[in-house]
Length: 532
Image (cartoon, rainbow, N blue to C red; front, top):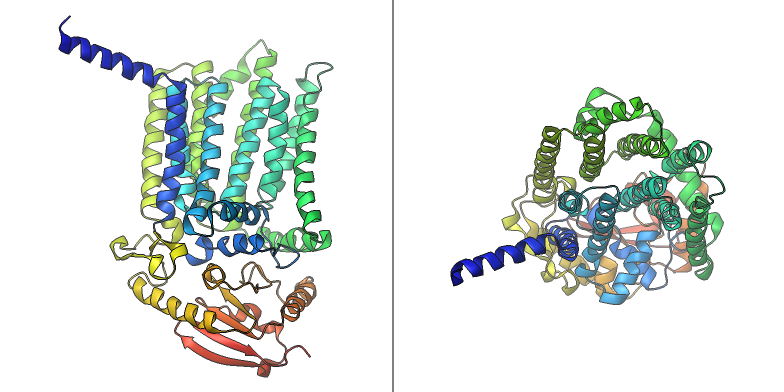
């Protein structure tokens, strides 16, 4: 064989062997799932959502803890995770976007494992996994409680599916473990999934479980172990359980009741908005008829039925939760997950090659569509109409934000002006030697000014603060005032979106506040004998 043909033949063999190599696939998945959210995490920001956990991580790093020191209706998990990353990699933007990237990577790696375990070939498992990692965290690129909660809930569902199929102790354990992680990110969808999973586990125990097999008990142990982990954090940091119950359970329940009663149920919201999620389940729906019609109901058939039921019910819970939150839709990464399951059952129960081709085509179409809409055009961050060529390196504001391409919906046409005003207020805060707090959606100002006085709220808006007619308002008011007194706060800086209406009603004597405008986005409130 001529040398040229021999060389080409060797190259072809090496490429084929590489494409069959699990380690190569794993490397592709890890790189893709980390680099995508990091890249898009540096590309534009939406102040309230993008910076929500920056100051929270900075607070915990400096011994200021949720529920005890600041009122929060969102889970403490993200605060503590961000503080660890700030500790390891310093307080900077890279440490912040790395948080989102690592969770995205965790989702991708476990999804790939899941697809292989349920019978997908390596190549198909790879493309479904890549799609999940492209559609999950890159749309924000920064840590966000709804993403954490949904991702951990999906991992819980995924491990329970494998528990029904494989019945291994570690799978049962991990299912409840991730469910608790989801709950401590945000109350929903974990609360709904807890009920669903318990019902399906009881059905499994009654109709499927092998006699004398007690592997399912590890579902209980996983939940207990994870709960003990969070309880130990509370005990070590002396966080009152009553504070946790009021802020994270009792008061949010009143929000949930209000949102449920005002939920807008119509064809556009319920069906058209999530049409591609429903379509991703259509092949699975068709396969389920063949599965149910099987005359011989083996243990495997029964397990497959309960897995299919879990898939459909989980989709409904994710959609209902998304409707409750009233945010931009973030659950499109479920489409490749359900398509992967549909692929497996479509092959097993009615092996139609044309259907598989359609599923793959649909996967590519949906991934491209939502990648462009949410990653490139930043719809989730309200930057669809932004001209990213106008973005400015946020290093001009502070080295901690170095590399961040600054452009926000507030000053989309003039990000330089926004940064200049932020530089001015930063300088003013640093020069102010009095005890002060900063109420803002730009929740990095404490970190870049070195201010260790903290706002008694994780963030301030009309949802996180109980209204006067709410039964928990009095508890909130006492909490807020006590923290202002403890820190001997003299000045309050309000920066960005007008937050005055979110906290001014705490001050019964309005004349005790002296207002001083700094610039068009910030003002200073001097406190004079407000709480005698």
